[in-house]
Length: 169
Ligand code: SF4
Ligand code: SF4
Image (cartoon, rainbow, N blue to C red; front, side, top):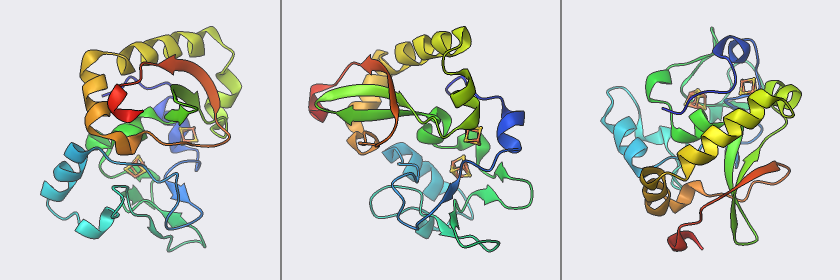
């Protein structure tokens, strides 16, 4: 599990994550192959929760006009698979981004917590930790085997350059 930057108490009061404007949103978390298998092996998780392009498949929000992750507990705003939530969910508001043949660690400043803290020493320390984690040999292997999680998100801020496995170029 990745050490978290945003405190859980802050996230529980925020409605910024796990909700999407469209059913096929590019912001819906991409899944590692092993995560897909883990979800499919878990009792009670329908295969339709995973899209054909290896993302979580959002469902219509019963309380609104948007879409929500099928694993979001609507009554308490909690993730029902928190202990096995996908890598991209653990990473957010940070994202792995491919831009002009560079692999970048980026951040989505739409997250109110990180937006306020991005220039703090705490954020600098976290970015150093996260870059080290993502550049570790084990994580590079995971990236190499799961190129689907390297996306080209727009309107995110670059915070560090990462090692680019040549399989992804
Ligand atoms: S937008 Fe930021 S603060 Fe809000 S739930 Fe997501 S990670 Fe937490
Ligand atoms: S798996 Fe959990 S953390 Fe990830 S989008 Fe769904 S509800 Fe949110």
